[in-house]
Image 1 (spheres, helix red, strand yellow):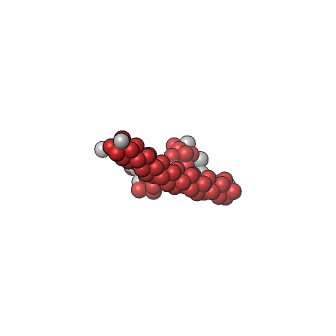
Image 2 (cartoon, rainbow, N blue to C red):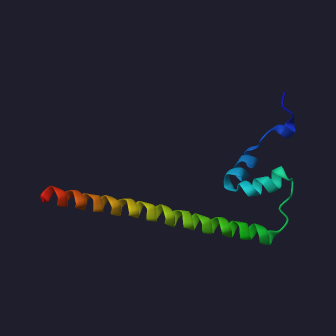
Length: 81
């Protein structure tokens, strides 16, 4: 039977899903979060990455649409000639 300290809690899973580094520091290395400034900087870093990911996803969709329109134009030109 597993010992209680081998269990993974929902809080640990949530921490890991949000930030693997935060989980490694708090649960893996057992270093408590001590700096409010560092926590704020981490939150700001996550927010910046979320903005980058949203922009990247939007640009990828726009590129796929542009490629589709270009391909349709090429096919139409070939068909009409």
